[in-house]
Length: 219
Image (cartoon, rainbow, N blue to C red; front, top):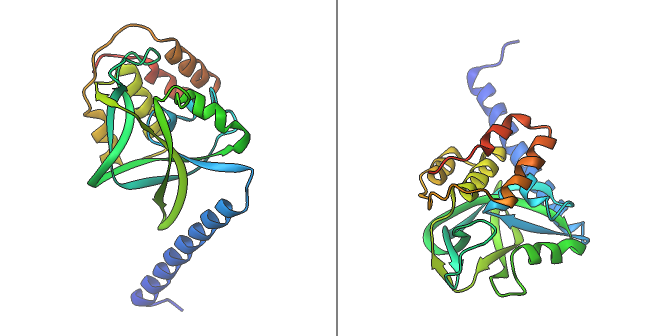
C-alpha cells in the first residue's frame, strides 16, 4: 500500500525529531559520564585538529558548537606581537548580536596544563573561562580562553589560514567560513616554525589533500 504524501511527511518529521533528540541525549550523557576529561571550546587556530594535537595529543572532536552573544576579535596582549604567529591572535569578547562558531574538543584532564601553557596562562596572556555553547539544541559548558589587555592587531596570513583550514575541516557554516575569509591580515610573508609543524602534521594525516592549503599567500 502506498502511503499518502501527508503520512510520508509526518514520518519524515518524526525521524528528524528522533535524530535530534538522540544526538542531544548522546551529547548530554557523554558530558556527564567522563570525569577524567574536560570539554574545550576552540575558536582560533585550535579549530584545526593537527594544530591542537601538536601540544594536546589526547584531544578528540566532540562536536561543532556556537557561542552566542560573543564576537571573534584579533589582537596582542598589551600590544606585544605574538612571536609564534607574527601578528595578532584570536580572542573573543561580548557582543549582543554576535555568534562565534567553533569546535568542542574533549581533552584528558591531566593535559589541561598543556593547553594552559599553549595559551600563555601563567604569563597572563590569556585567562581560562567557562562558557556555555550550543550544539544541536543542547547546552555544553566548556573551558575556553580570553585574552587579557588586548590591543587590536591584524593576524598574519599563516594564522588566519590555519583558522580557515580548521573551519573547513570541521564544516563550520559556510557563511561563517566566508566571514573568516574576509578578514584582513598584516601580509607577513616570512616563514614560521609553528606553521612548518602544522604542515608536517597534515602531511602525516590521512587528509593529504589539505596539504596544499599550507601554501601561504598574503591576504
